Length: 228
Image 1: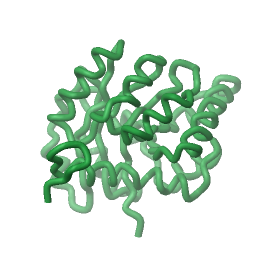
Image 2: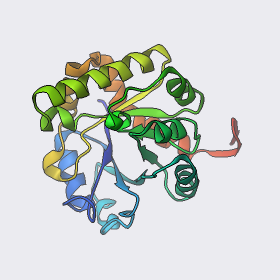
Image 3: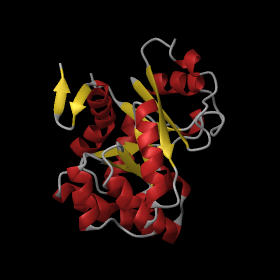
Image 4: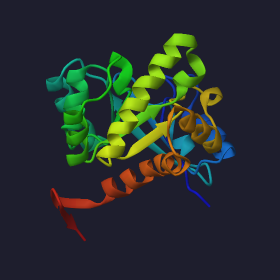
């Protein structure tokens, strides 16, 4: 049995559903873990304790940091690291993408292609060195049409080629804003295959958020030194 994790969804007050509603739907679809990452400004999630009572589902409250420049991002990421077990960054501009990849406080960079530019070698190498995963929100496959979708797919494929070369982990997600946006693991794997993932890569991308959580739950005296 695979314990797949949906690693980047949004609940009330940012999304349209409560954490418990999202968790119930995710469990029905075949997930064992759900990470809610509301954007900066929507951190106060509506009734998170209700979701923790749902059997068979682990619900984690993370955050997706928004920042207009590198200085603000580093400050917010450090602050978030002390409060959340999972820290994502909403990328897009080259400055924010680079800052996220260079910051060991960051677990996941999502939407790096929002600036309509693929990641570069320097950014991916920084992500490798700082153990930052690259997120692939697959919702544009459903939402976009014609040339817009083609351009988005081309950027995603270029990013995928680079992270393969440098063995940077990927995370795939529906980026759901409501329970209606959630997809089964099988559907997400199929969408990922359309944009260039191999089946085993897509499965690994649904498992990787759990590895991030396991790593963050450990106690570290300093970088690379674990307290047992």
